[in-house]
Length: 276
Ligand SMILES: Nc1ncnc2c1ncn2[C@@H]1O[C@H](COP(=O)(O)OP(=O)(O)OP(=O)(O)O)[C@@H](O)[C@H]1O
Ligand SMILES: [Mg+2]
Image 1: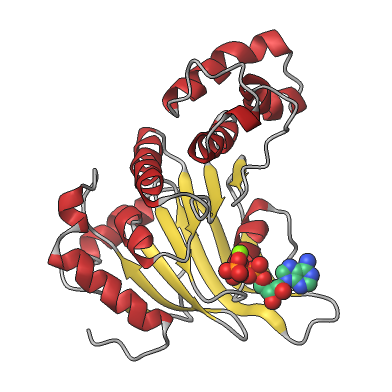
Image 2 (image 1 turned 180 degrees about the horizontal axis):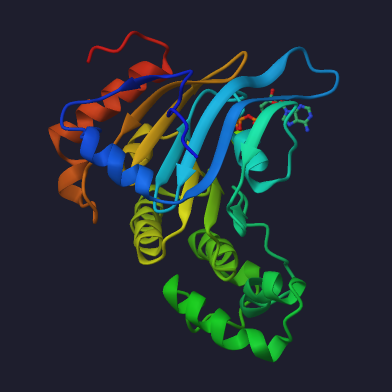
C-alpha cells in the first residue's frame, strides 16, 4: 500500500538532510510495519479528540522519533500501534506481527531474577523454562548484562534495569519496537551509552522502531525521521528526515549540521515558522 507521508504535516528538510527521490524509493521498498490513516482517538468524557486526522507510517528498518508537548498524544500513538488502544476514527494497517513495548519505568518483577524477568514473554508464550535459557543468554549478552542473570532488579543500577527492560522486549524478536521515553530517568552519560547501544541493536536486527522522547538532541542523534506533534488536538505538524549515515558518532553530535537540525526541530516544537 502507499500513503503520503504525514499528509497533515509539512515536511521540512534541513541543510544536508537528504530526503530526495533516491531515499524515497529506498524507503518505499522496505516493508510496512504499521500505518495510521486519517486516525483519531478520543476518550469518553474528554473534550474533543486526543489527536485526529493523523497519518503516520513506519517501515522496517526505520527509526522514527515522536516529539511534542506533554499531553499531545505521543504515548497514545504507541499504544495504538501496539494494539492496546482502539481508534475512534480512521484506520490502522498493522502488518507488524510482533510488536514489543518498552515503558519509561522498566517495570520488572521485583521478586524475579534478571533471567526470569527477561524470559517472561517467552514463558507467557508457552515455552518451558529450559527452552528459554539459550535465547535469554544471547539477549542478555547483546545488551551487556551477561553475568548478572541471577540478580534481582533491586541489585541492578537504573541503566541496567533499562537494559533488562529492553532485553525483555528484544527476546521476542519483535518486528516493531515501541519505546516510550525509555531513558528519561537516566543520567546523561548512561543515557548517551544506551542511545549508542540501542542504535547498534536496531542496526543488527531489521525491526522498525518508534521512539518517544522530549529531548531534541536525542531525537536528532538517533533517528532516521523525526515527527513533531502539536497539541489540542494532536497532529503531526512537521516531519524531518535525518539522513546522517550510521553508525552515528560524537563527530555528528558536535557538527554544525546536528546543531541546525536541533534548531529547526526546536522551532517546530515551539510552533514557530521554520527558518529553513
Ligand atoms: N485512558 C485515558 N483516559 C482518558 N484520557 C486519557 C487516557 N489516556 C490518555 N489520556 C489523555 O490523552 C491525552 C494524551 O495523553 P498521552 O499520554 O498520549 O500524552 P503524551 O504526549 O504521551 O504526554 P507526555 O509527554 O506527558 O507523556 C492526555 O490529555 C491524557 O490525559
Ligand atoms: Mg507519554
